[in-house]
Image 1 (tube, rainbow, N blue to C red):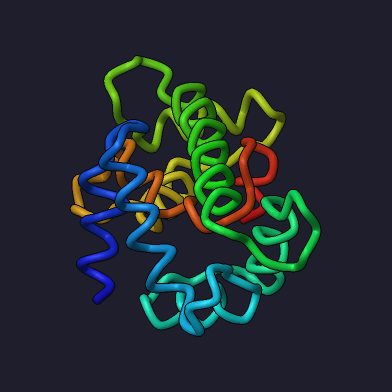
Image 2: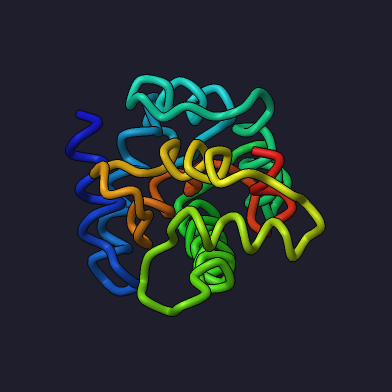
Length: 165
């Protein structure tokens, strides 16, 4: 099931379009296990865990709280898709800021350079370790889809929060 979700959400949707909305709807339907038209913290946590998506303690609560515009403690589909769409935009901006040579991929030297610009000195090996945690295909480079998959269900959305992740 995780591979289906991965394909629907990560691989096939390169930018926001009607296919993305269908992918979001499919994901929402899978997470809404009690079929009440809403995804609460417990459903989000259980669903993502079942799909093999790891996240930090409190992340599910933060996602729901961030997207819950009517403050009912859960996300309806409109809130869910709006949260993901806005979160992706923030992730895209962060990705572009790290992609120093604008080749569509982030390598270890770009991670090292970006962190140095924030006053954090790391070794090349440490940058490679960070990169490996996101690198799905073993290329020692992270493209947008790998970046998106790694951070989509992490409520971090700027470089400082991502570093802490």
